[in-house]
Length: 385
Image (cartoon, rainbow, N blue to C red; front, side):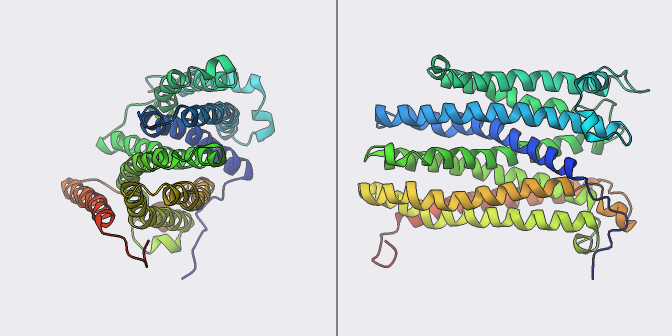
């Protein structure tokens, strides 16, 4: 059955570009700082890491973080202008870019019944965004690059605050669902940006392979292992939060192909599934081979696996991740509204089912990690080496 999109509002081009750009900016800032802190920095500080390799990767990381700050700053302003245009009831996006109109929007008084003005929330959010971007952009300076660890660790909570502050409701939620919706929404955004932004950072760092020493395979094996754990947590958080958000807005499986919202969501689900499949390939095929090469002290194979095979797969994941961000602006409204379905109301049964699914997901992710370890312990054969 063809989708009935009569009740679906197709977003304008400026809305697609600004929202996609904003999430790219968040991915660059949140994902890169979290991944640098949890994956890159510990690996570079390991005793077996050569000073030369560490310096090359630290310098490349600083450059990446600096450009991430530029993207966040530019994308943040365009996203703020998009909010002004949407609030202006027909205001052209070009007019909304004017600083005067943006300032008027940020200074607007609170609505009746609100505990804080919505503009004030966005004013604080964008003030933090500017500080975050400035800290990252400072890494263009050679003197600041010598303190990349400190700057990245300082920018990490600030970048998280950018998205978390924007989710603060201007009016008190009326029920439990009203409190849970922004929590799951932010869990979805943060985990997704860490996942995609981390992949992009590691791909960028892998571009230094020609400048690294023969022992860099050990370093990269450690980084891929560390990020694998980060990605696994992100997959769990994206799945759990995505299930909640989908249940809130989709009243039945058929609405995934009979409503405009559902079609856009279905495309996103398929793209995310592609990301998961690529991650599973890394976990079950590449990581065991990396572990075996490391145990056998096979430097050549280790370099080939960690800096050639692995980045190729990750490049594909980055492309899929950017496609997900491009689809997100089209997921607007609600399939339930389009189909005339009743509003989703939570209950004890819903929470019990959600808890069971969460436990099952956690068990499956744990089993995945154990299965990967078991494959790594199997002796290599000529056909699989």
